[in-house]
Length: 441
Ligand SMILES: [Mn+2]
Image (cartoon, rainbow, N blue to C red; front, side, top):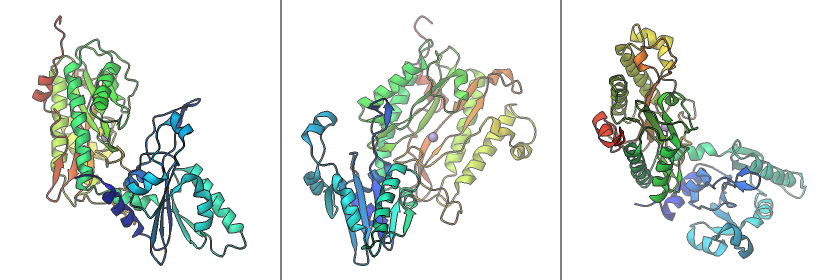
């Protein structure tokens, strides 16, 4: 089960089936400057990758439908020994012709000229209207040239946003895509569990981050899917904490939200564990509560249910738990209505995941109605509780504790499959892995 050329060809065909007439343009990603003349590591554009699987920059996919049929063209950078000496080997036009199941492969340098020629007679142009301003402007100005040319009888009359069509396709994952996510999760499991074993008081959060990244890279994941959050103690109450520069203290919990990207597919896992190796009674009470809520929400997943229903379930269960522990007061219904629980759980129950960690896939249909879960959708379930160290309204024993537990779930015909169920999560499992205390205490 592989994502092979036939896989990519099917996706292009399915995309083309959705339009009556026109040209779809999907450019590859370009390098982004990090500082002065150095760049961030290159990451391919997700939609471009989804449709052709090509890793290089400076490429472009042209998909066209006319009354007569379809035409698929891939533009790639031509071989150039002088350039390749600096930036690495390029596939080049002849090899690309062999590899990709498209009708034609051209040198990227010919794009402008071919566009001016081939867009004559085309009414609709499908392009990313919101994401890549530079490319949009470039194509727009070429079209303006055509439009002003009196010898051109028909030039594009409308620019349409193409992303929605691809995003709807990306919503449902094939078995081969799920296999990639599972591969990402095997590596992510190793990283999380290794860090549980290695953590000691006095270590820095970034040392744990380094362990995670080392596992990712040595196990074949080229990158993380997002910058790891390694948040000890009260830092866990900053939702997107990425400073990762505090010292681990005895008695603290560490919240780690980290997942690798394996062959362009993400994983997104959060685990929370005690530095000392053992949860304190209040930490354990909160942890068990969040875990119970997570289990409850995951069990509700099946085709036909809406994400908002899972959100509501998650909030209700967390609310009940917080009232039982004395964190919130009053009746659950009233607390929910007033939104008082949001102070301690301000984020969503989960999100789509795939080629992007927050996968570019819609939550609503074309009419704006919320989508129901369907077989093949992949989502995260990530309840949490965040109590600031200075929150005087909460019993003292709970202050400064932040907990999140996150798994990656695929919707199946009969319900769900938890793709990350093997990553240590129950208190006993976590404590067994966390050695915690150093030999000297
Ligand atoms: Mn997440």
